[in-house]
Amino acid sequence: MNDLKLRKELIQTVLKMNGLGINQGTSGNAAVRSEDGYLITPSGMAYEDISPDDVVFKKFGGEYASPNGLRKPSSEWRFHEDIFTARQDVEAIVHTHGKAVMTIACLQKDVPPFHYMIGVTGAKTIRCAPYETFATQELSDVAVQALEGRKACLLANHGQIAVGGSLKQALSMALEVETLCEVYWRTLIAGGAVILDDQKMDEALAKFNKGYGSGKAFVSDGKS
Image 1 (cartoon, rainbow, N blue to C red):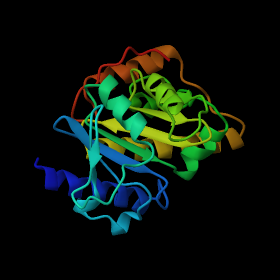
Image 2 (image 1 turned 120 degrees about the horizontal axis):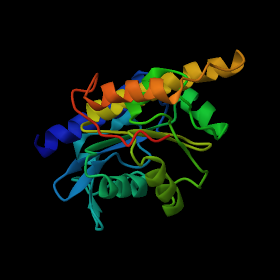
Image 3 (image 1 turned 30 degrees about the vertical axis):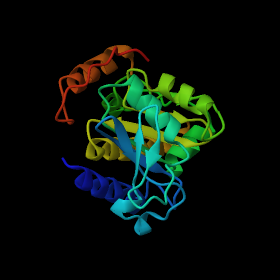
Image 4 (image 1 turned 45 degrees about the vertical axis):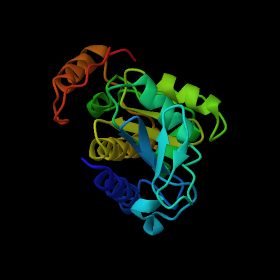
């Protein structure tokens, strides 16, 4: 896929984030690998105002530039870059501030296996990374750790990060995590869910690791 198509797809992804209700305003961001770096949404721009010339290219460990020379990368570029560096299986990253993920993240709770679809994220839980200030290296460090062996994580008192082999996959994962967090939130209000045991989750993970529902296998260590 050429650079212009990727830029357009990146814009459509962040527009869909808001359209799906899993993000609002300019609070989230997204990135996709390109050559020796990645394309990332610009800082502080309303998504509907972003053109392909506003999308920023950031070289791994190097400089950044937008075609119009006017834009800076999202303030969260550090965790995008560090995730791409740590995870060669990841081609795209979506970061959202959905109401449900923020709710669980503000409880600083891992999401337990209350539903078998937790397994679609690659493990038996969705980890919540410890709180660190936004747009810092410290936040990037805990995000990379929380994503080990997984396709998504929560960031304490913040939001979520979802990854995939494409922008479409990463967005789909972000939507799934938002849905799971909304249902988990409801179970907490109702008195708590019945948690699936390791055997049941191992069976679910075995199916997901064969590529069920993803179009592509994702190997997990299956650890919680």
